Length: 293
Image (cartoon, rainbow, N blue to C red; front, side, top):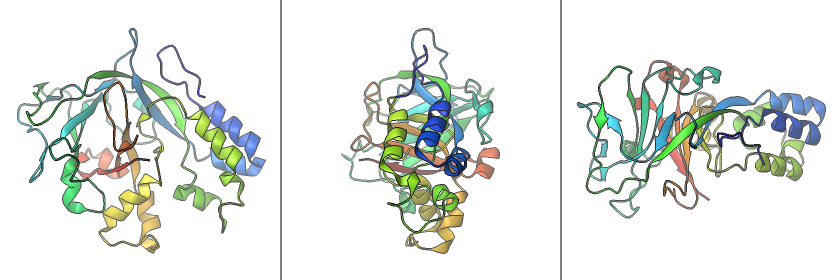
């Protein structure tokens, strides 16, 4: 279990992850595995004296000329979360996050159609069901009332902490770093190692900005890359491995009891983006996927 700071945000598990690698992997493999760690910003419910960097739920603050996001033919998107980029410790990240302004995340959560329409990366017509809006600093905003078709999620203020993140065991980076032909007989897939990693990350809802995604099932980068290449792309398509390298996690928001958020069966929402689009603030180019158990 990760140690927790007074703010309620887990301290960086870097030492724990490195210790786990040293204990369960041969020394050369441990060194290669820890070289894959990436810094992320973990978001958790703020307590009384915590610095607030964003929120889950509630109502968004939007510029007057920005319309509430709508998936045409289906209905309005629900407001999931927002983060104040200036308040994030984004300087530790290895992606070009904005240093000011606000990111707001919206998702068609099935309230208006009882979950009939799904937002999936390999269905281009559904991509309007998840949006990221960036409001630059200095632009006047005001609280925007939730459309009457939707029930807003309870507001949960968020605080931030820096953490190191590890790639999923089946992430393409692991495949590239540890060249092998089978999974079950390789130390990075050993039960004791994977269980220790799971326990180190078992610290409550996994809301995150940057770093490696924490997938519920398979690597989310592969799902997004397949969707970006177009419908019908096969998993053995040689272009897929190259496309996967081009995407990085922007944000993930887990199921969260305090915010009454349940994405499928204890699932999570993921927004990924190409670093060059992030650097140019092209958030309309972000791709979305979701997973549940």
